[in-house]
Length: 270
Image (cartoon, rainbow, N blue to C red; front, side):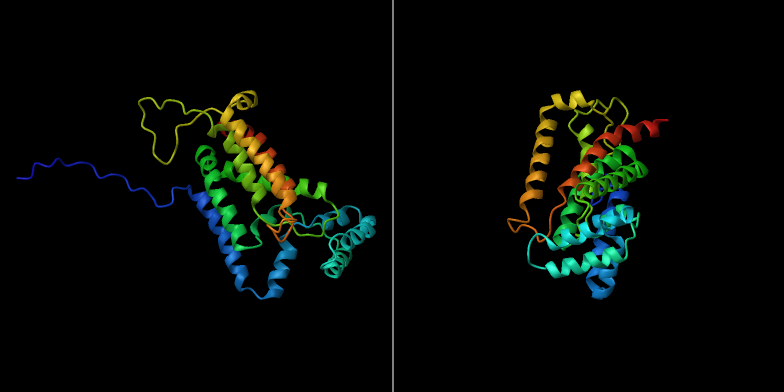
């Protein structure tokens, strides 16, 4: 007779411990970039023109009188590719349509596999705790608002640029900032009620004064701001990137994510 006790079967733990909405977000970014690799060049360029955020396009749409400024800015800077920049600036002047959706859709496009995979890793790392805490729709609100805010700040800081802005970094920065509001807070005791493994014990958000008294949070914020600024200013001169890094878009997304999380949580409770 077998005396081994009949123990309950342990729950299955998925290979990728991410909320479904985060898994879908990463999958969409990877899928779009994979499709772009097999598109004819003409189609891919059309996709880029229709979905990327181009600051000069918005400047011209709001103030057509700045056409000469856009053309002059395109002729300045590095001599390499100046004719191509001037031709592209002339194309924008001739077709000055703001395309409001580009404040969101630019996040769907990436410049390389390294670019999309890096954003995917950071999205998985910081989007997951936000999605678990807030749910799918509030996660989406934070990501989209941070994306739009990052694009807006980029346009305001460099309004004559004809370089298309692409990448999900602003939205990821917003989710990262939202996670900072509670990730460095010690978890509250769970009590007698068991908490499912896929949902962490909820903790209250730290106030801004509390956050700045939290050494771990302060160190994280300082490292993020310094590395973002240095990489944005030095990546292109040092050859670490073949295009300017939009540090201002990252900053805009970060600030909005930091400030928006308490608001969307309050709406959810109501």
